[in-house]
Image (tube, rainbow, N blue to C red; front, top):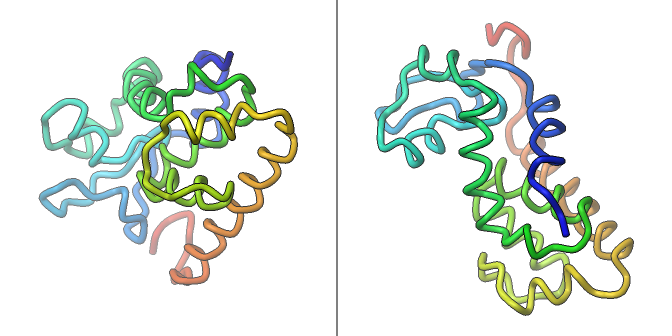
Length: 164
């Protein structure tokens, strides 16, 4: 079975530290304030978890331990403890973590399932099916298309590093 302890360090490494890109909708809290993200934790995910509207300081001071606690909510939402293949669990949880419920729905659609956004027995059955490489390849292809569609719909303006 998949383990969150194997995903967290990979995810946090790729998500990186604090960033505050004004073009990234995940960087805004529910008051519409630009506060940034860290380790891939959006301001809204922080707010849902802690019932507190985060400031830029809250986001800057986010630790891997706090990010792991937030990641667990997404892991559990994917029922990833019940997924037999670590790579499949990783791509699915990462997609949900970064894209919300639309990530799960897109994953389900790519696997020929009803895209209801709920990881239930039917979804788990396909995820844990005999041809795990094929399942992973379908998820990966759909994820790349999902991200490409986002990039195409939001052209970069200015300097991506500085946000100016």
